Length: 133
Image (cartoon, rainbow, N blue to C red):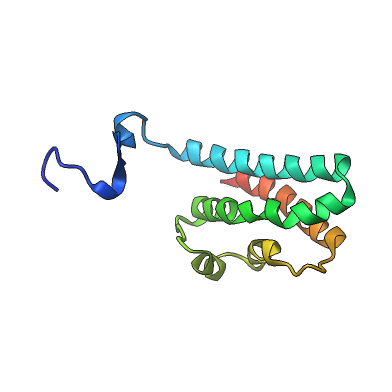
């Protein structure tokens, strides 16, 4: 690319982000995963304690949709491989992570108590994983 020209795929109306923000360091990526994981864990715990059971059951799968972004970034930190699609990510991650990616797709008659326990314990183990990165 010629000097001074911009890649339109990497810019928006205001130019490129690198003109306004420092480059992200590995520690920033780790903190993003930890923050996302903490937000998910807090939401799960808060709803479990304070929300009506029926509301929990309805909201649970929607809450778990963020698992894709969380697992994709955790996988990137652990492996160096960034999966663009969910299908590609499922091919690259562990069986346990793959099961988490499928939580948001549970049928309407899913077992909420079992699904909650699985996600709750996965979050706990993921916190340990972030400490090993």
